Amino acid sequence: MLEAGEARHVFVGVCLSFVLWYIVFLTNILGSFWYRVTFASIVLALYAAYFGRGVDRGDHEIGLSVVMNGAVSGCFLYALFFVGYNVFRSFVESGAGGVYLFRADSAIHVVALSLVVTSFCEEFFWRRYVQAALVGSHGATGLILCTLLYACIHLPTGNLALVFAALIARLFWGLLYEYTGSLWVAVLSHLVWTELIFVFLPLK
Image (cartoon, rainbow, N blue to C red; front, top):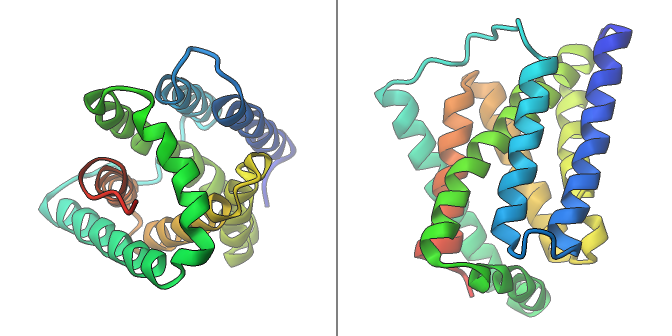
């Protein structure tokens, strides 16, 4: 079970993520969505680094197998979204269009660089900090709870397609992290998926 202090820190961190994601999606602070999401992700990663300091989960090594697993799993998730988008286009096209409006918010190289930073920072916070704490305390239930929390921070957008996409992606990376035990596999999978879906092969 989580100690009271650790549980409180995780709770505050999740609450902070709700506030930051509200700012990211529903305000115009910093002028660009990509600046906001990069800033918010860095703040969450720093929070996790501070309150999760001293914890070595042995997930920091990176090698060829890690790179390959990350790249292949990222491509697989993209293919899953590609099929899902085309099968359920009439239900998700409007929501996807709303998300892709952010793609034109900045120059494409800014978008690509932002995705590098956010892929690492989000996985560090949600996977290595929140999920690790919840799974360590509640087992498989902790994985489901972490997935639902990440989906819920998107609810204020009112974009159900985005919420569902966040749910699917988080569950995928959560299972990937638990199966491989590697933060870097999850980070690289996240990075490949986001670069494909936003930069190289947008669905819409």
